[in-house]
Image 1: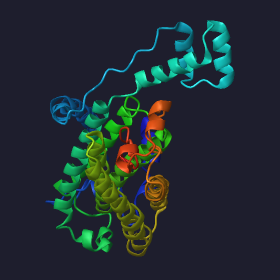
Image 2: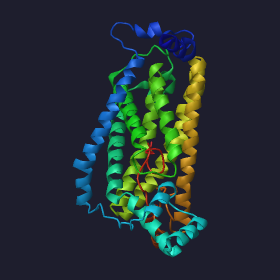
Image 3: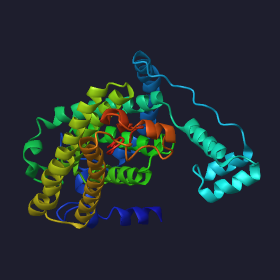
Image 4: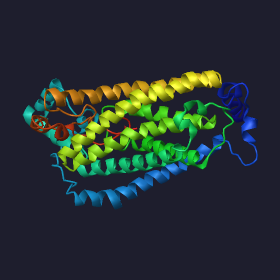
Length: 382
């Protein structure tokens, strides 16, 4: 049964153009190597290594940097132990008016005292600035490193300058070590993000990021399986570019370097627009949609890949809308109430009120990251 399912799933007429078979890809010419599906399985144990490396990096590198910048972990106030309130808090962190009135009668507490208890309890669960700084520093380091690596091997590749080379003699295109390392590193990183998303700082766009990670993992895995590596490396490189500036802006924000944060946020906004709303759709997606049709011809899997690429583009538009809201508030109001993708359990009323009148970098309040980061998809984000 397993063999029958595998044969059905990996049907050649679905995954490959009419002129190609899996047998041909399994036996490349002497001196050449083609991608094989089992290669990407190495990314799963490697993702565990990436996660462990992250823990070591945060402990041995990021935390000492946070101490140098005087970013303290902080000890939040502890809410008064109360079994009734704690039981409700586990299911609903912000009770409505009816529930507050019921609790007031049950406990013989004033409503304002109950509201204060829930506010302190939410603050108690909120991660410290040091935790968010360490998370962003890890993502910044990875995005910067993988982007530099990608540029180094793409710079000498003809398909970076002429995307039609992505489809000449497709899918019989040799696999280079640079492509393999880039793919496996990115896939392991996104698998680690997928797992850690359930333990990291929780945000309003949890489901959006979950869809983003799933679409990214599927794209990376299956584009490797059918040797769409040339276009795939371009997609990953373009996505990593703006994430670098986002994580850098958040690091400056946590360290309270106001002007640096403002400048980096401007660079992030510009790079996000250029890479994800200009280069990605009009250069890469256009190549996969039009040039691949003209040179290699369409096949069944072609529709799947283009659909996933368009899903990512839809997410880009949503994220840029959030970025634009922050920018518009900063330009016309001189302040930003809070990041539209901040943590679900947001700050207390006093903190929100005190944010009025602050500059964009102070009220940006990027509480963690996502593929992509707090505003993209890290990003990150991504």
